[in-house]
Amino acid sequence: MSRIARNHIGLAGSTQTRSARNHTATGRDALARFGLARPALFAATAVVALAASGAASAADLIVNEAPMAGYVEAPAKGNWDGVYLGVFGGYAAGTAVNDDDTVVLNGSGYDGDVSGWLLGVQAGANMTLGGGVVAGVVGDVAWSNLELDTDVTGLSADVDWQGSLRGKLGLDAGVFMPYLTAGLAVANTNIDTGAFSDSNTHVGWTAGAGVSIAATETMTIDLEYRYSDFGSADYDLGGSSATPVSLTSNAIMVGLNWKL
View 1 (cartoon, rainbow, N blue to C red):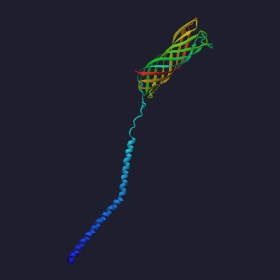
View 2: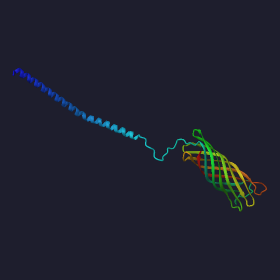
View 3: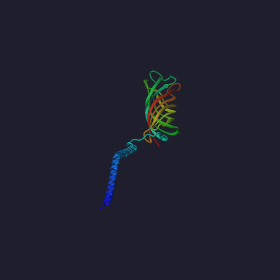
View 4: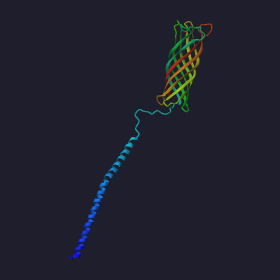
């Protein structure tokens, strides 16, 4: 083979060798760069995974929980409008006074204490006026056994029934409605001196305050205090003229009402 041919072959081989070395170096550089970038890639992947996990946890936290069994959220406003019927009971204590000082009601004078129980029925209606104000009207009648506490021999007196017709003005507080009430009051009283007896109906006024509590959608509970001045009534007890007797009482009552 000629020298020129050998030189040509050698040059070609040298060129191929250098090209292979260059490709090898390029591969090593790429691997080196990948090795340097790999920690950053892993870190970025970890950040994305943590962010996705945090988003899923946050989504779990904002899922609305089911309300506990038996729990009912109290409404901001109640539903007090409508007609209702109810029953009530309570205790009353007061005073009977002989206004002209002609009949001694107990050993110490012309007045005496009366006290006893009440049991009655009532009917009424409410209407919301706006701004949370509730207006109403109610009438009631009750059996009572208020008796005169006396030490006078042969003397007895008792109130056997009483009633009222009243207006009410309340404030809607959701399941509660505090209210004021006032109106007409009547009471029937019997007096027996042993020799004479008479009965009469007193007519006067009553005023008080209370609170209604919504136990269910149709049933309410009333807690109420009232002062009643039943006024004076005349009794024929054998004197030359009628004997005037006045009657007052303080009553505490509990009632149950059902809306119609």
